[in-house]
Length: 56
Image (cartoon, rainbow, N blue to C red; front, top):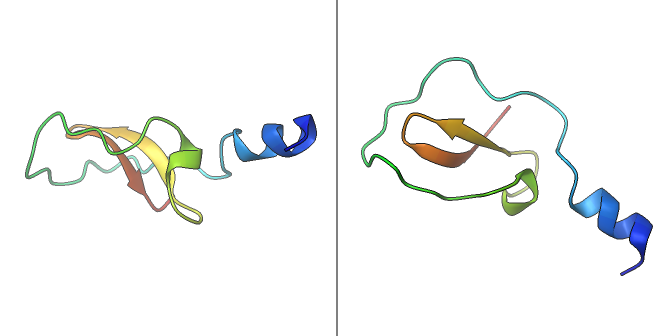
């Protein structure tokens, strides 16, 4: 993978994390660390239940 492709893969995805808190069944759960850990258009957001992939 070249440097330009790597930069594209590891940058934040467009959009913002939702302002409305989600219901959490388990506190402190970490599903992702960065946007690129999430599928498709989802972003890695720091929610009350931990870092989770959500739709922007």
